[in-house]
Length: 251
Figure (cartoon, one colour):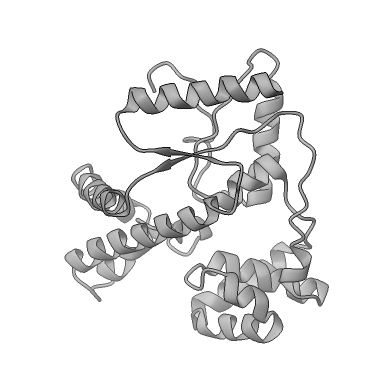
């Protein structure tokens, strides 16, 4: 990776369940060690929840692996609709907020609701934890049509580089939480002879575009983030470096 030390890449097996809380814990350990001889670290990511977990901390919400496994198995056997109905009944506020195509989020909410007896929306207080480091956020801002075109071309490139073979090799793990992600789950119906390969590829592109849209919505929640209009790479890097220097002067 061009001589730059990376973390949390090629670091876990498919069977390793890594929650946002796990990411927070492991990420803080990496940062604590790295800041002993470094002034800056770069967090690059797509999942807003995982980013916030590391930078701001998570609420103390009850969890039970046994209950979660029960809910996961129920979802495997019965689909998402009955779980969504339960969530709508027990917490209509969070039901309106949650990504209704994301079983991980839905199962996590129901797990907390059943354990606590309280709505998940009331457990999520979004209280920030004190960190020993400062965070400066940057969001690369594409025009929507350009972004969607890049996503479509990226999926085509991934197919050329062997995505289908990669998914096929991971089929024995298809029921794991780690496999319920864009770029994998869309091919399972193809391998089950339910849809064509072209339909699977189209689904990957569509779900990737939807995910990007949700990312943008999530990042807009943070009013302190710097939005960098996408253009030539050196220009963006220069703008980011200048903003970091300005922020440090203010501190």
